[in-house]
Length: 520
Image (cartoon, rainbow, N blue to C red; front, side, top):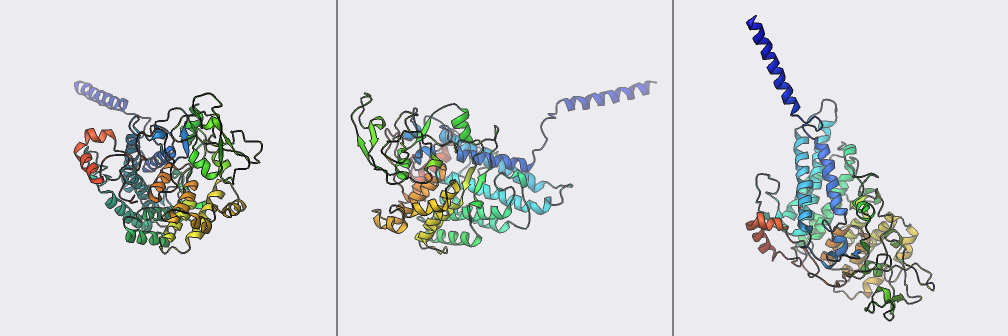
């Protein structure tokens, strides 16, 4: 009888122990997040960071002089220190993108599936696509900061990683990209619906990788022309984007938290912080002004409230204008066109009296774009102008880029033909009229910048590389025109020795320090 009691007691104790352990388990969360889910999350974090317009996260739309702030103008005047802009960008790309992609890679590599017969066959493509997004993310970090942690960057046990040389990183990324292109097998699948850009289409990912290689190769043209030429010509051989159908558009949803961040910034916030900048407006709708007296008695003459358009002075209106901006500013009745009015750079102004951002861009499902066919055509135009062997002339690629951009935004081929016939837009005529030292940089650079509207980082990079179009002077600049992000403050405090070495290597941790690829 005694033995029976002991046995019953042991069973009860064991049972209670198991129950107590079960109580400590979080049954709502999976013990292991699938690698595919981590990939989806990293993909969204990456696109969000590239798309968002938020004064704490990304102000490149302001620096590219597409948008301007109407009230709090520090960021329009190039302030990087009042808010943690560099630190947030750094953290999102390293922690929310690269680290999650790294973990996704490890999990997928170690996972097998008894229910999915194609899992093993598709695994190499998944790993190659993860690698391509890794490369894209590191390229943005190098283009933003210069020297960055790379070889030691994702080791969670190393809180003070060294910084690697930016040019060395960039060339290594291009080599990795070549390997990834070769590793993609278009006869197999990949992520399917977990991929919000291409829905797992490996052929499109291969074109994306080649197009990214083209873009990265072009960026090195002024610092290592031979290397750049080889990379660009190799990318073209691999097969870059062929139409707008290849565009890398992230598909947002209609409900939070999966909407386009611009919808959050401009609609859900209920704020009216941004309007069009004078630079983009006056490039897309060239006109003259006449200046009146201080009609609004604000003590300032020649600001927007004292300015009117001279009748008949509007030369043309870019066909993309109505897709980029709202026609909310009253037109002069003597002018048979809608007049758009931008806010001066770095100057506060009235939200209602300046051209606002179009409702199209503010839609919750408006796609987030990483790379598109129009940009590829302008990159090929640059390559042809540099005498790289890319299969056609700079002029033809230029025309294709303009046409692709107009059509992608909703315009027609006829709109593009009419626009390209304008004397200031026609490639040959515009080249002859240019006073730039290298005229093609002005002509291609200006149209490329217009086509990159709403894509602040890429536009800012193009401006720094080509030096066109010329940015207007800010009203009250807190620095010179920024050619890089400064390193995050946390790096100065927690990784000081490596931060100092990196700062010295690039020529100083200043916003005006030119990076290795920005030679002129």
